Image (tube, rainbow, N blue to C red):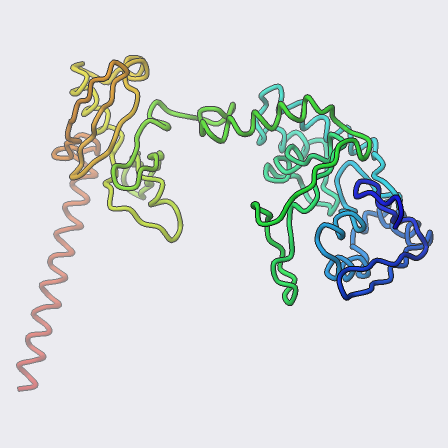
Length: 352
């Protein structure tokens, strides 16, 4: 083990002895295994060697990351000692970084790669999640971060993201880079900025004047735009707390129909109709509170509370024929309930 460094794994040795506590593990990796891996790579038969999987489960996470590196990284191949660039795949990686730096949305990059016929190592189309993973992977700038994950339970071998439980080790210039380090760092800063600012920071994502402006007075989360589609009625556009749209969570806040919301804002601002430009310029945020009121916070420090009036909203929003249809449906429903109630009373009398 003399001279062994984490960034330069001695994976080409024919036989190696590693002491890990009280466990002694023999690792045998010959040239034949390396040749077999390269052949599988060319055939796109990307199934990891079972011996490597067993080895990773047996070694401590830090040692396993060094001796058994991730063999399947798009843009690279493992030659037995280090990562070697695959030129065709490296061009696709550079295209992903270039598009992101140019402000092209991830969805557009996904469509571009699909039109080009580019596939992942497993033969599937790229997704925005996979592209984001590539953009955040430090290996593409020639570095390596060890122990990003660790095995929490050595019985089930279940891996967990390292969120500070164990130390991580960052190694620079351990293999050839596909993108330069300055571009990689700029992309990381841009990803953090877009996540902090929300949808408004993502080019290509459609936003509205109320996006990231309305906050729930119950849970503090922002409101999102939603649309209800009906068979016989026009769609209803409204704004709702994001907690309500999250599976397994609930919030007592009220939904705000978009047209009724605009009327309430126009009244609070003292304008006859809703002016989107004036709203964007003057209003900093809106807090939705019970029962169905909104509190406008202006940039000059003023606050105005205004109720979102629902009375007469349906008559203004829906055409007369739709309202007549809904009234008829309510009448028929009432008649059915009365018929069911009278039938139940007659059956009770007959039993007596």
